[in-house]
Image (cartoon, rainbow, N blue to C red):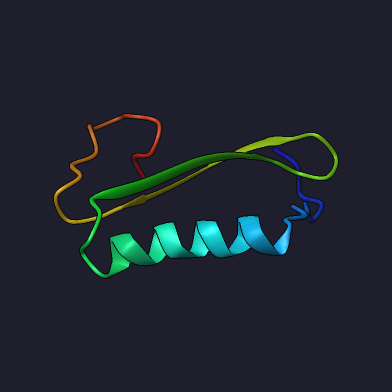
Length: 64
């Protein structure tokens, strides 16, 4: 794991689209959001936002 800060540069249009999709989950209009992004240094990052209907499997990749 890297302890240095990582940065992801987004175009304004992509940032708006990602925010709209995440907001849909928060508003209950969608059950989940998932995106694969790459940092400016090339590290792949997965972003997953679950709604109450999206049950995460025990021990799965998104389990805390």
